[in-house]
Image 1 (cartoon, rainbow, N blue to C red):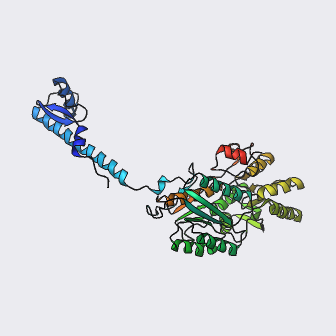
Image 2: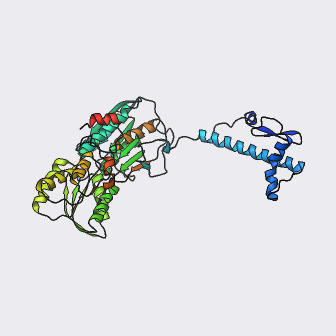
Image 3: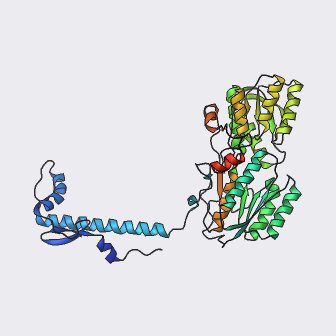
Length: 426
């Protein structure tokens, strides 16, 4: 623990008061003696408590006793303040000292932390990322935000990103290759926890800090896990449809990529939100979160003549695709859930569809890089973080929509404004 100030230093912070011609130490008087009026004013408040409204002189012995009590109190308070200050300076940093995402977009979900200096290592570092696959503009932007965050840190000498094209065998090979390259930190965005768990175990046993992105709730061994979306995302959309349909009707469900944990969790959140209602899921398809496949599936359902009162989407670009189908076919719009994508917000504004847009920030990629850096710098980190901001609703639409940016922009972003305008200029 840091040493407290020496007594001499403490004495210099203490001044003096005068009692019966003797100098007693107290703050602020610089050792000067008080005159009779000042001495009376100093102690009259204590005396007046016993005789409200009357100021009467106290005895000299009482005055000296009061002065000594004041002096003792002041000394104890100053020593306490110095002790607290020194103690605070000697305590290691907490996970709260590391901001992974701004504006309250991410909060810790546990009090458990990694140990200070547990993974501390001198730079330059090699950071490796294994992600499940690429297939929509959200993932493209997430990778861009990862790379930008890595480029801002001079201690990151090499940043390696590999994606598995949603193939389990490929992700296994990718991680093994990264471990062979002796990465200093490993970020894993697994296709599923079942695929990622043995890979994370291997890295942990090698003493490498592991940041798990997407598999949440200790589904995998990790130093830090970062989650978002999941059941919360699905429930936000389900609650919206439940309210709009007044608890009854037929809905279609457009799911993401089969077998991906995030997709399964979103669907479960949606399904649970309908429990106790008379809303029935009459059609369920997997659109892989993409525009092209989502549009083809929506065309098939519209042409089939199946009745629909609302549509739930597992996010990404499928809602915009279905809006285009409804417009092209002349079919009346029904309430549809969306996501925080500028292209969808533009379509929402133009069509007037009743909707809601859960937020799944691509800044999660930057958060994983920042967590890696913090661990390698020796900072303690909370073991688990989650991002679950409120969704965009009709009243918020104008605040979030960016007419100057193109449809590929996802929000909220960690990229600086100049980069956004350059990358997503319409």
